[in-house]
Amino acid sequence: MAKFPEAQARLFHNVFVCKKCKKKARTSMQKIIQRKIVCKRCGSKNFRAIKKAKASAGAAT
Image (cartoon, rainbow, N blue to C red; front, side, top):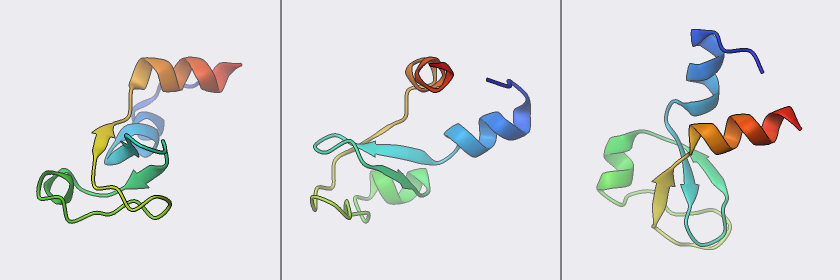
């Protein structure tokens, strides 16, 4: 996978993963902290930041 700044920002900046169903959501950190974002699939409000090492390793295979 290419490791130039534009690609890194596009893949990892403001991307969060639902802790319950693992669906990705792109939003700002402020909305995640305030719990204004609801998962479109399961309705949960628990999100975590995407893991860069795991995501880049999985994309290569």
